[in-house]
Amino acid sequence: KSDGLKYVLREFVDRPLPVSRPRELVLPTESGKVIGLSGVRRCGKTFLFFDTIRQLVARGVDRRRIVYLNFEDDRLQPIEPAELDLVVRSLRELFPETATGRLYLFLDEVQSAPGWERWVRRLCDTEDVSVFVTGSSSRLLTRDLSSALRGRSVTFEVFPLSFREFLAFRGLAPEAWDARGESRARAAFADYLRLGGFPEIVLADAALRPLILEEYAGLMLQRDLLERSGARNDVLLRTLLRHFFRNTATLLSVSKLARDFHSMGLTFGRNTLFDYVALLEDAGLVFLLPTHDDSVLKQARNPKKVHVVDTGLVAAFKAGADRDLGHRLETAVFLECRR
Image 1 (cartoon, helix red, strand yellow):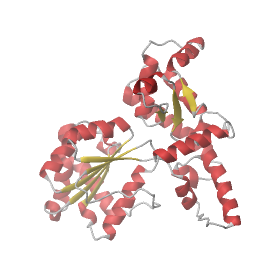
Image 2: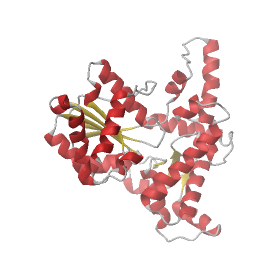
Image 3: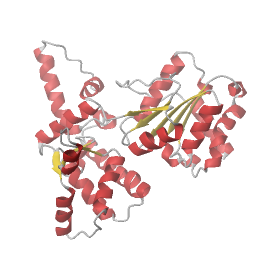
């Protein structure tokens, strides 16, 4: 395992950083806190890491003091909790000059490394390190990280591109009182509602976009829901995910939905549907917005409104490119408010 780690560490130091485009979110690098990023796959968490690393290098930080590890890399799998200590040890064997001074650790998809929370906590207690972690589960970082580090972490929620970022990725910078620029921005906004904000989708050829979106949908279902949760009723989970993405910005009554699914011939236990809705929330694929009311009891009793994480993914679930444009607009506004 140590030799494999050394190959991975050396490769990162020697290769050029991937090209990345700046995002509105700028990560603090000297906060004294573990920085966590949560969000769905492919929304740009890894490239936020690369952009942050580029800023560190521009400030004069030696690349040998910066570690980037993706724990879904097959060369690191399977990794046992006791083997995590090899990361810093292997770096110092490769580059003895890193034995003193600050290290910067960027740990991608940490949910694939069992026991990572205790290891990160011990690193922060015993080493001069700045640690950044990402995960595709909101619970993983907002609960597990905060409880393990006892207030020494800050978590940022990362979303697909905002409309401002969408314009920047397309090289558009409309100015006030410019009729032609306003027309271009209106056309771009129609594209934004249709395509969504996944960076790869925005930059991809038009013919490839539907295929990439379908790949995203399948990957999220398989890796972030079925494999990680161990859910047994994959048909129910697929049906629920499809229902939400085809009906974004609509009210959710879990009891009514259960009756509808039963009428379709699906069989499941009373609490299974509630558990699966929670799984989708945990994965950051859907958000449940309660009714605005001063009474917490009324909020709990009333149906919640469902919003999905990206309007472009609606098309991946065969909802049609122009279906329910008003609902897509409402979801885009919700996501901007949450962002």
